[in-house]
Image 1 (cartoon, rainbow, N blue to C red):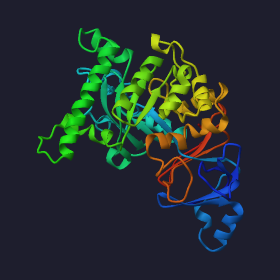
Image 2 (cartoon, rainbow, N blue to C red; image 1 turned 90 degrees about the horizontal axis):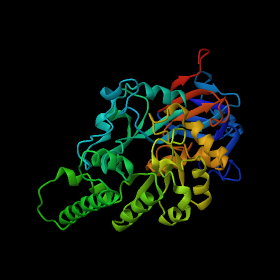
Image 3 (cartoon, helix red, strand yellow; image 1 turned 180 degrees about the vertical axis):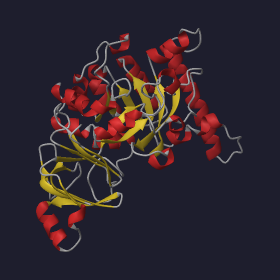
Image 4 (spheres, rainbow, N blue to C red; image 1 turned 60 degrees about the vertical axis):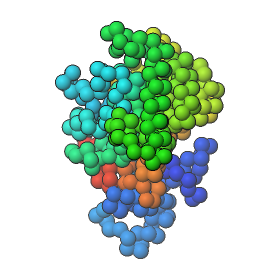
Length: 402
């Protein structure tokens, strides 16, 4: 398939593309060629005409988008799509195994229902991939998965699994267990139980590395990719002190981590920058329903970016609806995040933070043929999704009824 006459936002390093102040590669009038489920070529229309004259394409597989904005498929870096299903209440909610504060061996992919209607809503918004996984009721909730949003069989939709280990600080684990008279009742207990879990997992890993014959422990095996640096901790943190506790523990064990929500991150932006950890910010379009989010603001993303922190924007679906992910990024722009960074926060930066930028997040030869085509800037409220393409197939096109 050849997509022609588009305004192509590559989010890749292209010497022949126009570079704005942000360095993002843009072809003001360009093309993208897809071959199977991969991107084959991207460039100017002059380059395309030379390619087409060589007999590489035919009229039947050309999509003329007539100036529309062409993006890599959008990415939601933190949500619970397919796990907390819409409309089904507790019956469709598999987000938290709220019976034990430490359940690291749970795998989010085992709870995803690809029939969840939110997947189609994502497609209609130009979102092609998500990181979905366990919630924040537990100190260690289990493993997240990065997946495509089109399909019926989870095993064929996976981009990376496991992709992260969910951990949580603050009110959620405190309330879930403290109200039942169980640990953790305090932030001290959350940190202590997590340290104990990590110490035991590290010792188990060290014994295996030394070649000792140790019985396989399912609860500890799941920590090995984290300890090896293959996947990050995915830390649910809102309050500034919880953010700093998460950083302290991750540094103690030399672990990678993403700071998710990071609601008071703008109050300690320099400390977050110094940590080296990226932030997945949001959701901002909710009520301040608990004390730890009293300082919630869309300005957080802009302040953190100004400090030099890499940012992605989340929906946290179903906390806020996934279909409006581009609008949430736009609200961050309204409150100070540069326009280019808002677009990167739902494309290449989201892919990099989720550990899948080798496959998605930019329009470059060899990457997955996942594209979103819009009537204009997707962060603007009146912009429409014209086409969504996943693995080289058009899975959504705007109709008169949309």
